[in-house]
Image (cartoon, rainbow, N blue to C red; front, side):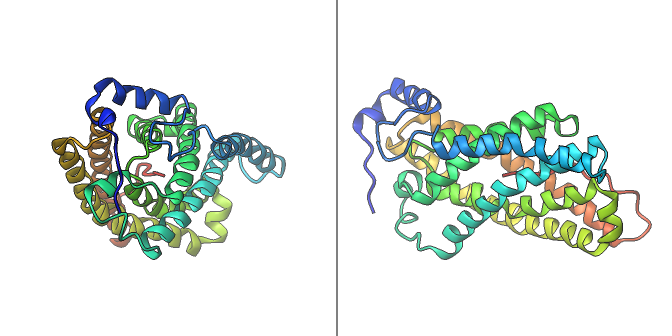
Length: 293
């Protein structure tokens, strides 16, 4: 499978910058193979995720199930669950079950071969990450540099992916990796509800262990290996002069290194949490948030 990148795109530095700007403005890019990023799908998801927490907070407070502060946090996590499940279904189907041998056959195809699954994944994930960044800024508990930076960086990568760029890798980073986020969303709903913790302690424990194990298996073990190949492809494309936009690939590489560092930080936190869970008599769990998308 061969993907062509025009000589103008390869050699014109302003074209690289224009590509990024055009992507952010929602225009069709020179390759013509990706839809505008401000698609009806992205807009529908964003509106839905903006309305859902309000309705859930009203429901939780009306039935006196949760206090208002806890209701907001539970509503946030339940809303995030929907796009996370979508990401996992698309990513797992594509990465584990579909035949990606042609897309994965060379540096050029891994970076530039478009896939319908990744196009849809980019639209939904962009809406989710923009919403998530805004929510992280608005909600005090999630207002940390790591949390806000993680979601803002992922939103930017979704924008750059409409070139098309890195569709093959998006199926892993945006899709399959979200398995741990599904467990974390449900676990955090329990964390903010004493009723659920009291009535369903085994489910609560199972969700926490499921989050830890899925994170360690995919984000701690698989993520560095896929990242290494991704970074190598970026370097090879840049050296060979086949990069559609050197600035765009540089942003991809920088964000990947930053996000990989966060995975390592959260891996340490999770291992510490598992140790406290397994070994009796350790201090109370003070685990930090490790949500992704």
